[in-house]
Image 1 (tube, one colour):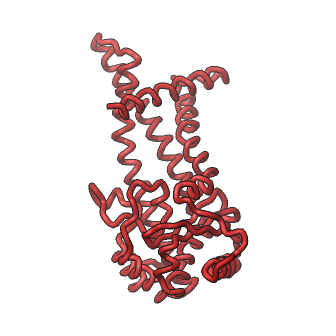
Image 2 (cartoon, one colour):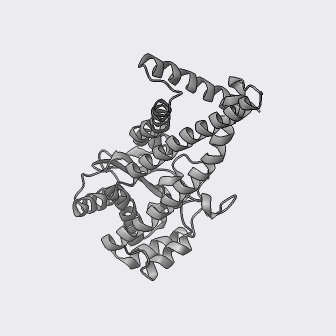
Image 3 (cartoon, rainbow, N blue to C red):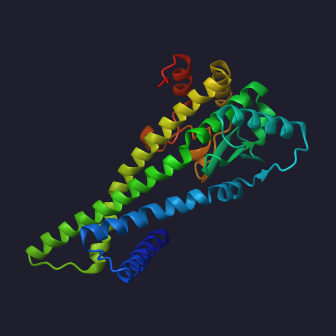
Length: 289
């Protein structure tokens, strides 16, 4: 109940603040154009802010440390691999980090392809062969080269915008229908109806976002196969099947190479395809554009 209460209060507070901001700039939030502006500001702000803070937030989430001066053999090897692959992909050298974890995993993030972060778990470096680890790094470098983080952010912003916009349009239509029947609607009831519509369309938007997330995993695998060889990438994915399952509560799970192996509801809400499907796509080259 506390979470529901906080959600309602946060939603109302945000709408109130943005209503004041829009009124100060002379924008009528009740008009279609004003509503669209409101929805775009509200829809993109969180995604864009998260994108620009993604490197700091990701490092804090996993307790990772950027390698400034390689000390161990593993750190030197990791720096050399990332440098070589970044030169091959014609992108700036990303920041490179290692974090302590029991699952073999890695992720890439950053607001720009030329100012990114690639982080690798200690378990991956300690468990995988050099060829397998090189393939995993190539997968993450492909995400960076493809600009997947920015594309995902833009997609999420567009989806958020339309969820907010359509929800308020339908809530307004509902209000008009009730008024025609002589039943007035208070602002609180209106906002509750908006939240119901936002929840419904939010689920549909999540399905679209997760579909794109799975799509980009296939293409990152393809990019890694082109960079280091198909056999190395397949071997890396097969090795990942032996790993501990990452926590579904992780705030960076969508950016990792190894996602949760089980979905609570269905595959539609998985950020990663199953490892078997990814291996099959590489083996039979169904990943090719």
